[in-house]
Length: 335
Figure 1 (cartoon, rainbow, N blue to C red):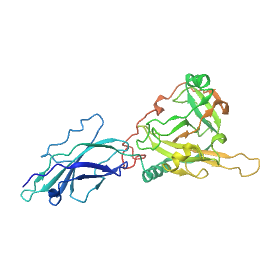
Figure 2 (figure 1 turned 135 degrees about the horizontal axis):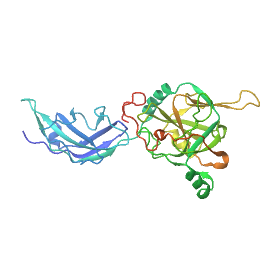
Figure 3 (figure 1 turned 90 degrees about the vertical axis):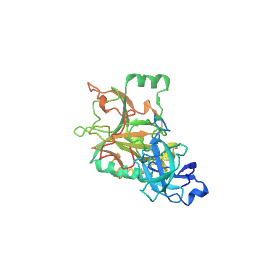
């Protein structure tokens, strides 16, 4: 039988966090006789992209010939925001012995998967809702840092904490990683005192700002992530942003928006009677990380020294990787 030509002009399209479509050009004389496609895919990271299997070794995916481009989904556990290399062969199944006549491998093409889409974030949100627990009252947002941080803010930044780009901690597919700037704040309290904990993994000085300054009907709240780091603790990242702000416009098409007055994580309840104050609550059973997208001036709150005698460094989340084996906070589209 005449040998098959090498697939040309590999095209990757419609890439999501866990799927893609692939197509290529074949010689006219091959189109009618090709019965199968062999597709080989590997992560790019630090590997030789040309290290593909020899023609007599089974490939990772053998697909019956269909019209191109074809969708590839579910054959691999693709990870979001990950660079991959892919190459293809075409094949004709021979009647005797079930062997294949195969072409040589095509050129190697590289592509990168996308962020979590809306459907994936909804799945993650549902898992987070199941872990949130009951709500506890709180009155302040706070941010812990070392003295050098606050000294820099006062002397070099005019007393203003400016938003910084979100790092890569948590779920790899969260749309805010490396794309949205903000300031991380906490609001968790001790259930027996109703006050913020005395210890912190981030430093012995604490910036405190009344919850009413940031959480009110003119702000929008979005769900961004749910993860753990090989510990019993689970984290939920929420984005808090003024309505109509640049951060709000970014989140509007990328993240699930939460009802400020009715969600399992962070709530604002308006005053019920004249003269009353609004009420604020946070989820008890997860650690909330609130990502506020606007600058904050130290004069909007106060900086105090916390009374804890040690720092719990194991709780620090800077660039921390999500535990891919946890059944509580993982969904089925990569980590």
